[in-house]
Structure formats: structure tokens, C-alpha cells
Length: 280
Image 1 (spheres, rainbow, N blue to C red):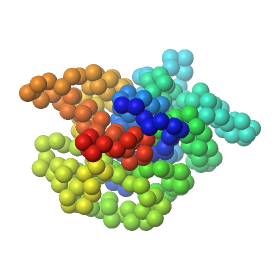
Image 2: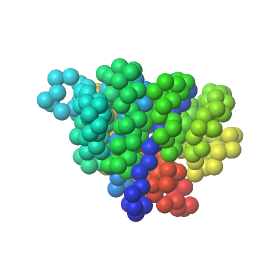
Image 3: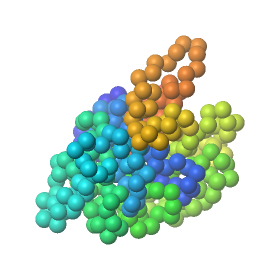
């Protein structure tokens, strides 16, 4: 599916105050599938300092010439910012491509808090000039420090919910101050268990969330195994290639269809693709 015509570029944050909501895994999964499924260039970056969890799932894919499993491209970006020469291409050139021309990540885990604070806003502004969508991991704690800085740049906030009604209600209670800062908000249930009686529709009804504004990233043993092997793309690419079987349930096909639906809801809410009621 193609994006809307014109210069449409959005910054999309994923966040939850609950550590049970699988923020990082949900963000990386949706970002990668967005790059694969849509005609889009996608960048993933952390809005939380020292966030090695966002980069570890890609260690096995990093360029062989790097002696470290993490990239030091952020140092070159700092130099370009200091010199007043940071360009969108400079951000792209100092990011790691995961799927060429579709999905990149910018490694910031080795940057200290002060350096992260210095470069994150120029990176977000510059990246919008090259990428169709910039996905930002805002972590699983209170929005403060660097993560709070990012709020002012967001076009959309995806709030990740645990599949536990009590904990989800606590998340929504803690959102009230954030609603004054970010008007465009949708929801994603992380680690979603499809066999649970607490389905997406039940969350939508309970918390009065329009169905088009809530989706999920399913729980998956295959996804977990690929993350533990530092190669999340191994599972995502395999699941992406699985064809739905007639009258037969397939776990990977279900997983990918659910993530594609979540990706579509993100892009529709961000105004990057046209809304189609029949696709909700």
C-alpha cells in the first residue's frame, strides 16, 4: 500500500509507564513491518538514554567491520551538529540499515545522557526530511528528561497497554497530564495473547477507545527466540513471507496479520496513509 502523495513525514512515539507493556518490542516490530509493508523509509531511534534493549535485537545484523556491536555514528552526528552541518543525509549515513531503503536504526545506547539530550531533537527534526516515519522508543517509565524533550516533536503517541485490565487502567490514569502535551494518541496491547478472553474489543469497550485506535502486537515464542539470538529480523522476515492457509490456523500468519493491522492504524492516525473504514 502506498503512502499519501506529497511530503508526509511523521514522528511516532511508543511509550507506557508499565514494564509489562512490551514497549520496545512493540515499537521495533511495528516499525520494521511498516518498512516492509508500505512504500516507506522508516527510522527507529531511542528517546531514552542507554537503551541497549532497543539495539540488542539487531546485533547479529550489524556491519561486520564494526568492532563493537553498537554503532558510534552518533559521535559523527554530534560533530555535524556542533559544526552546524547536520543534514538529513548525514543522519541516514550514520544510521545502520536493517532493510535497505526501508528500515534503519540509529544507535544511541553508548551516548551519555548529556550527549543524548544534545542530539535527539536535531536528529528528529532532520530525520523528518529524509524518512517517511520516525519511530521513537520513549521507554517504560515516567516521561521525563530526554523522553520528555521528545514529546514536543511527536505527531502521534502510541501508548502500550499490558493485557491486564487492572494494570491497563493504571496506565490510562497516568496519562492525563500527557494528554495536554500530545493530542493524537492511539493504543497498542503488547505481548497480546489471542486466546485470552480479554480481547482487543473488550479493551475498546471497557475504556471507550474507538476500535480503529487500538491494536496489538501478539505474544510470540518465535519472536522471543529471535530477540534472544540478537536477530529479530530472522523471525519477522520469515513470518512476513508466510501465506495464510485456507481453513487452517497458522501462528506466524496470524502474528504478521495482527502487526500489519497495528502498523496500518499507526499510519492512518499519523496521517501518512488514507483512512479506509473497511480496513479497520
